[in-house]
Image (tube, rainbow, N blue to C red; front, side, top):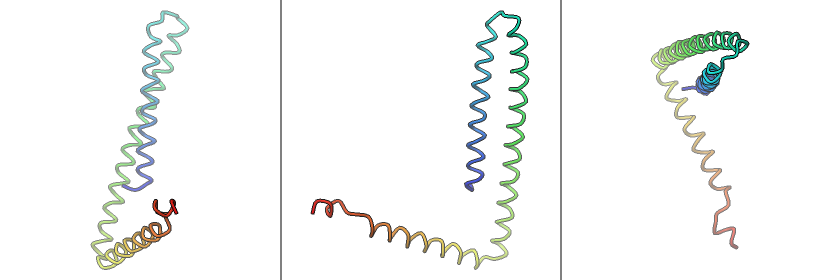
Length: 114
């Protein structure tokens, strides 16, 4: 999963949590018998339903875009297998070099005692 889709999923979960909290607050308010609160409850309830619908739509759109991107990437790999292998090897080599240089530059515990 890409970082963008992970961020979108995290945002969707956070928004769902907010909507759930608003719904719990609305349920707590429903115990009150104030006539002024009934109007507020109706508006908040409508807003919660709208938010849920938008979140469901956003999730569907995200899933559809992710599937299309994965399919396009798969087609590209099938059309360019050796290029994909070279890119993967290059990325692995770059990560290895970065990790090796980080390991060499990190102070050792026994060096600190000297």
